[in-house]
Length: 378
Ligand SMILES: Cc1ncc(COP(=O)(O)O)c(C=O)c1O
Image 1 (cartoon, rainbow, N blue to C red):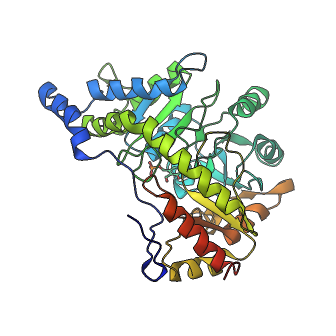
Image 2: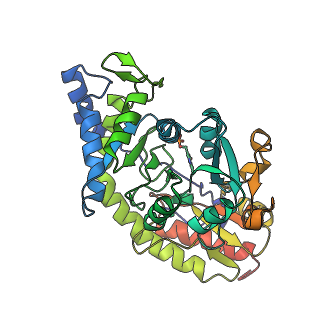
């Protein structure tokens, strides 16, 4: 059992939550029996059908294209849209580097936008404003830390402006809806809520787009001929085996995390000077726990580490501060190059431990250590 022994406390920021070997065995035995290891095998197809059930209550299940990583889902989603080289892609500066790298690797030009202060997201309103200053080829809003983006608003944006949208919901599986217009990229990296090791998916209601992405994931082959050059980004049967085992335990794991989150979030909300990202609806869970502080995060970061609490500065530095992206244009409020909300989040946000195997005692120990680090209750 976990003990609240302050002197020997060590709480990691993250422990990935993947199915263990015995749960994988039935699936691995099926691979042995079929001798089918990759190239759209039976387990991959079953995994895709299972994932589509996540949206059964919506008009009809969407098309799921499983892929080798979330980055591949972004890259092939972009490739399938076939934008001209140099086209401008609006995306938030407050995101993981893969969002911008995917655009750059397809010879597109990322334009960094600011985010709003409550949900920490690039919204349609920001994109409409940016479109007054830049000719936008497309927009990639990000479901930051798994906080879902509003698909109805983005559908309206696509209809009104004609600018295509690809949603990067890498960490948003379990929260993110699939709209009518904008495909959604998910990551199944080990550290994500639905982790399988490495994996991803492009999920869309556009079957022609799904077919293009699937072809591009297999070198571009269409009846043995390549019309549009692709890559190899297929999910193997082994990765699908982990995915199917993970799918089997997902409802129980989610229920467990939800119960724990209730306690954790309430205890954090009671601390003065701490606020959490807004925009999660009832029952939705953050993928990682990031709080906004009133004090510089760096100060609390080192105090928490001294108390045995591991922390992480997710999305810090923001993209425009990385040398690889420093040349990319920025478009803040009123077309300015300043991104005030992003700079604020970079200075004041800090990630705390949050993972499925955490116990109530560990949550409370983190909150106690944070309270002491903020100079309350010391
Ligand atoms: C916002 C965002 N986009 C894309 C990715 C890339 O996903 P993957 O690691 O599966 O390639 C990540 C990974 O953390 C992410 O956080």
